[in-house]
Length: 90
Image 1 (cartoon, one colour):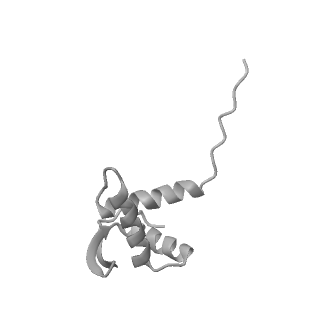
Image 2 (tube, rainbow, N blue to C red):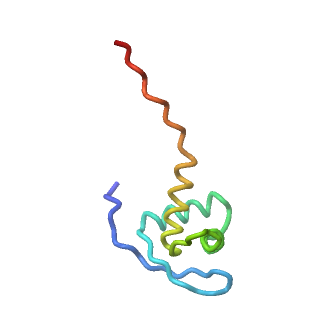
């Protein structure tokens, strides 16, 4: 797999009938597409939902940042919890 480092790519999305552009790195676009597929909704619908959650926050981030945060939080929820380290007896 090539390194995931790539400048952001701007794409248009539609939220509540309004078009806007979002700049995300290709890795995040891929994760967003996969999340939308997993939830059975179009990417635009998922972005609209993330936007609603973002706007309701006490200190809302920008939309691109909110999408990144949502994707990372989703990924963390799916990971099994790490076991505590084994204690070493002396």
